[in-house]
Amino acid sequence: MYGVVFAGFDGTDNSARLLVERVSAPCRKVIMPNDIALSAVLMREEIARDPSLVIMTGQKPSIRSKIAVERFARAEYGILQTSVDCGMVVSFFNENGYDAYLSSGAGNSYCNAVYAEVLKIYPRGLFLHIPTMENISVFWELVSAFNRFIGEFKFEQEKLLCTM
Image (cartoon, rainbow, N blue to C red; front, side, top):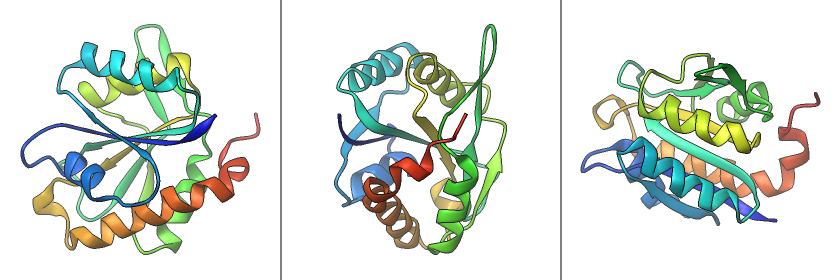
C-alpha cells in the first residue's frame, strides 16, 4: 500500500487542476482528462497500485469558497457510497481553515461518472468539489487546507474510514 492519490480534472483555468499542481503535500498527483472513459481507465490504473486513499477534485460553479464533500455517486444500478467518513472530512476542513459541507450530489456528468467508476472497485475513494477560480476568495488558503488534509491523512487514516 502506498500513499494518497490526488486527482483533478484538466483544463486551462480549471481550479481542480490548478489545486493538484500547487499542492506540495506528499501524494501522487494525477490530472484526469476531460473524458469519462479515459479518466476511469487512468483512475483504475492508480487504484491497482493500492493507495491508502484516492481523492478526486472537480469544479462546482454554484459554490463560493467552500468544499463540497461528496458522500455518494449515482451509478446505472443505484447509489454508491464511499467508505471514508465524510463527516470527519468536513470537520477536518472546517477546523483547519476552510469551510466544507456534506453533499449528496456529485453532479450529472464527469465528476459523478468518474466517482462512480472509482467506487465500484475502490471504496476508499473520495470526491471533493471546489469552486471555480472566480469563486475562490484566496486560492492559497484552499491549497493550504488541502496540504494539511493530505499531509495529515497518513496519521489519521484509520479514523477517516467509516466503521460499517
